[in-house]
Length: 263
Image 1: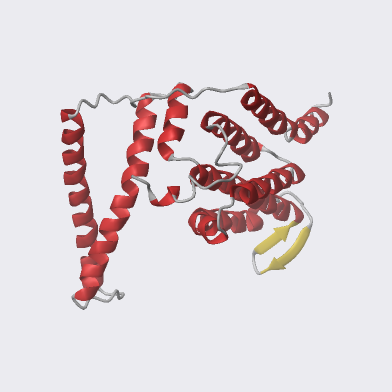
Image 2: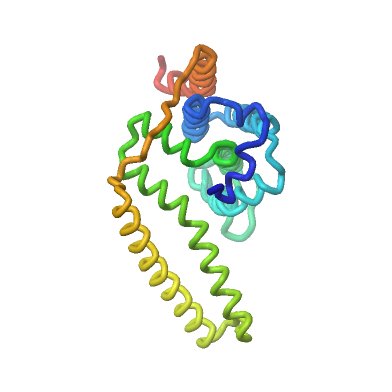
């Protein structure tokens, strides 16, 4: 069964043709590296690299933006809060001030860095999930010795989040067909609470039924690996290149730290 997020995983594009093991390793290296980088320029470089990978993956703009919208909104709110809270008590240069809120040059730098890092990481995650079937990602993580309980959480969360969303949409349509319109009132809040309660009850019952069905078919908690992920010379070369890039963007941070400690 092809999940909604795997629509473009089978198209003929350079990123889709990559060895799943190579792809997962390189993308995880880049995501981890850009998440901890302290240099805006280095983070911007990874963002440009992610955009290049997006072009090579041939993923539609609407597909990528739709999946990045919700997490980016959360990061954006955090960045705005950081904008008003960084450096105002440390004598930093105030760029703009209104009432009790001060925007400093340090706050702007931190907010921009957070936004660039988050955008790059989210784009890389979206490309990875959009160009690789999730079961292949799980198999790669299994080969990389990721704990089984983490893999099970990932597998079932990813597989049934779409079922959960479809069930919620069905309940919303059912309520709308009966004349219910959301309002700020006790009646609306009571209906929303009942909907959430029924959703969790249905989810629990379905989860138990699925578990019993899987156990009856011999499920032991370990992924069934039929094919092995083999890596060839070009795959190792790509992984080495990924390691070099991931380490290289940390050089400004390392140099800055060594200068700070007087080395």
